[in-house]
Image 1: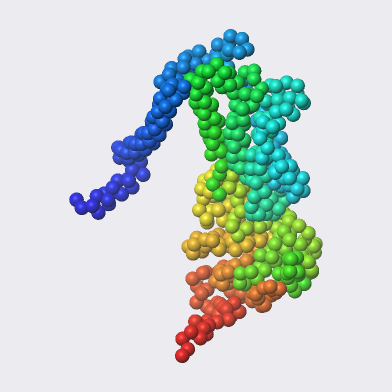
Image 2: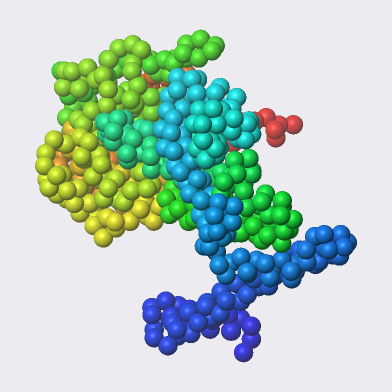
Length: 292
Length: 268
């Protein structure tokens, strides 16, 4: 059989299998399945190469600092120890990693939720009305570049409570990306869509519910994803300031106890949680996006 | 008094360099049930006239009156099919039509659903009603847009280059489809259509409005099409009347017919 003949035969097989002819469809599906498995195996392999390089560098740094920086092996022993009993509670200064993580996530979600509930409507106002934009945009431009930690004293003064102050800085952090992305999404609604509303006499409410929000939703979710990412960055620093409980406090406390194994373990856990937040919002983003 | 009267219509836009007159001195009387094509070069203000009839822009001079009443804004008595279909991509075909019906019609929910289904049936899209616009072909999208415009049962149907983006075969089918819908409605819907296509204009219209070039464009000529309906697309092209009309329209729209007229490149 020449090459061309093989090719034709192949195409014909595919044609038949499309009409769902029992055996050949399974064959076709199996091929697709295996090529997928191969693809995943490849990407896992390359990810492992990266991790291996990272581990090598770590090992070298550890021997270079003559053991001041713990070795990967020592760190992972502590890491799994920490994970084996994550929820123990021996008083305010000695809690399991699960409890610390839980209180950090709780603060982030609370601050982030309040921030989003305020940022989305203001973002819509900024995107939909020129006056709204002129009122809010200068404030956003002025305050957005400020490190959220600078707000901590203000939170302390207002709430007289370090826990509330931490939630307050997360709230401030969560505003900007959501605000800007929402305003951008709403501001970029194409004239075509607006014309539909005009031509068919849509009420303000119908325009909001059926055109503005569905159009802007993917942008809003992107804003939320960026916001929660920054909020998760800031919580660690915030809790180092506030103390109490939380993953940031845990990092600082472990440093004071000179347990770098615990610090590095906490870094890994912070990374994993951040990754999961991002994945969650990417999932929602894909759900609400549409094909024009 | 005609059904739709355009009197001394002038539309201008303010620009940094001063007033830009898009169209001026437009006078046109349209009877109920007429099919009118507006034809002209790009940028000659065809869409501007259409938008004035739709009520999407306000005349700076003159007026547009429908049944004796000046048009002040969009209304359910006029249905619009936009050039690029303008379907909302996040809603199903059914919802795209339903939202328009729900916004315009004053009847029970059940009756509204009934209307949507009837119109989907009319354009043969019943089995695609739950699909999103992104899953449809260009011709299908155009049918949804037409069904949406028909569903609100307007007296006037405004079509802005409705078949411009379709391939020749689909275009032919859609033209027939439009005439079928017009016949089904007892030929009492007035259709005003913008087109670039001379043959399409002759095949569909009772009168063809030829515009001259902008800025400050106005009507150059109005041609009557006396071909009897129903028209057969293959038969009419052979009639002397068709050929004469097409030539006249071509002359009106084109100044030069041969490449030699255009340049002196080959002159020695």
